[in-house]
Image (cartoon, rainbow, N blue to C red):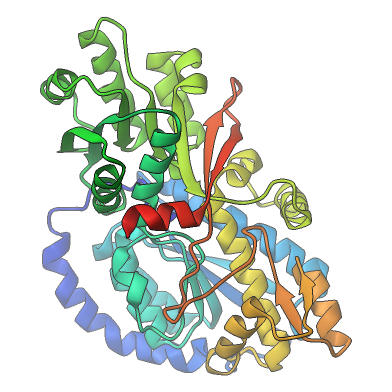
Amino acid sequence: MRTTNLTLPRPRPAGALLLAGALAAALPLAACGGSSGGGTGAPPSGPLNVGVIGPMTGPAAEIGNLMSGACYAAQYSVNQAGGVLGRKISCDLIDDTGDPADAVPNVSKALATTTLSMAVGLESNTAATTIPLVNAAKIPMVSTNGLVAFDTTRDAYFWRMTPSDDQNGAAFVAWAARKGYKRYAVVFQNNIGAQGNEPGVVAAVRKIGGTMTANLTIPGDASSYSSVVARVLAGRPQALILAGDPQTSATFLSEYRQLSGGKVPPVITSTDSITPAYFSAVRKVMGTSYVTHDMFFIGGYVNPSSQAYALYKHAVYSASQVKDPATILGVGVIASIYDGISLMALAMVQAHSTSGPVYNKDIAAIAAGAPGAVTVDSYAAGLAALKAGKKIHYVGVGGPIHFNAFHNSPGNFSASGFTASGNPVLLGVIPGTTVQQLLS
């Protein structure tokens, strides 16, 4: 998921060297993809392909599974309602492997060989290279990346309904402060998704007058972190703001317990880690009680009591391709993919076109809602209202969408935890205004 600050594999050392040449080679392909990806090249009876761009293989493949699951749920909902302008939609999985060196050729090939009507995913570790390609192809996209660089992007076809990493980092501190913690040790794995949270954490700790007892970056999947743990212990933190993949986190926490006489502070991390793999790895070394009582997962908020969520949940459990529906429902940032597809599909209907350059402007119009517009919480409801000649205002699983001039709508934040069976559970809500104040 982040998601915005998604927990991703370590970048390959050669990636930076390969990237410039690969990107230069890919640009002609992206332009080629734009002529068909814009939307009118496919036969009228063919499917509307939704490019799900994420890590489908490799160490971060679980993130790709979450992204594809949300797409399949949207595919189910849209197609059950009759499709878009008489055509079904279909999720087309595009593997970025979580590595820019692989993402550029893989995404470029997809743009050159497949007619994409919209795109979703485009996660943090590869967003800086994949988003320009999709934007150049004039394909509207809803990204789950958390890179601060996209807070003020001018990419016309980029849309984001999840917080950037600095906002997510500030939300970590907002929750920690609510729990009464004042002394924090910050330990992030050395990948883009995790480290992007650090500026927000630093700013928020300063704002609340807290103390950062350590601010360390660690390599992923090392055999031992004992020297790092010793430095963290020396600061006597009340809470650990920790971001790392399952094995990295499990190793760090296990050694912390060994060196501290069994006492480990609570952990605050991202909802992108509230997955079966993370639960299994950490529970194995820390026990069920610690995982269920002392771990808090912060991320984009969805309202589980809303009608939109009920419809989303039904779609997640009804789509036959979805794996592990409980986890998909527990990772709030992933719901933006479902909302994004619904929103883009309704924009196509309103514009009477599947061409990106034609329907792109209708995305903002439907999210904002015109005076007198009917509020709808699903594709089916929006489609019915449009067929009746009404204007619509889409309010989805993530609540009202307020796109700014840079096509960003971060929303509110949630704190979640694990149940003893490993399922996510909502613990509280952090208003987006609270987070913004910590960054001001």
